[in-house]
Image (cartoon, rainbow, N blue to C red; front, side, top):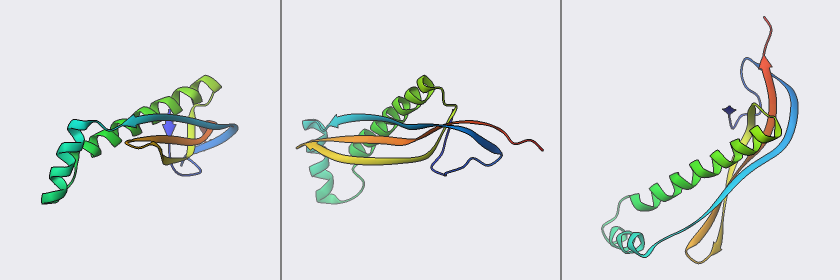
Amino acid sequence: MMITTAENIHGKKILKSIGLVRGNTIRARNIGRDIIAVLRTLVGGEITEYTKLMAEAREQALDRMESEAIRLGANAIVGVRFSTSVVLGGSAELLAYGTGVVVSDLEN
């Protein structure tokens, strides 16, 4: 499955647009990560616990979006974007969305 933020895929022709495909996850912080995060804010630097949490959420949202695209018959996703929103104090939704398409190789 080809997934891109671009509207087209070099060397490919979009034969059919399947439509919107999306995947999301809601993740909550935990007290252990929060304590470490507070300590890191005192000394500065990256809060690696939250970086890891967000990376895992992005991968899960992408996997779910890809699964939906496959289920609908797409073999690529173009125009991929991410969105986040707070659901409840301490938890957030991460949404990946794009357009599922059917592509083929360009003929020379």
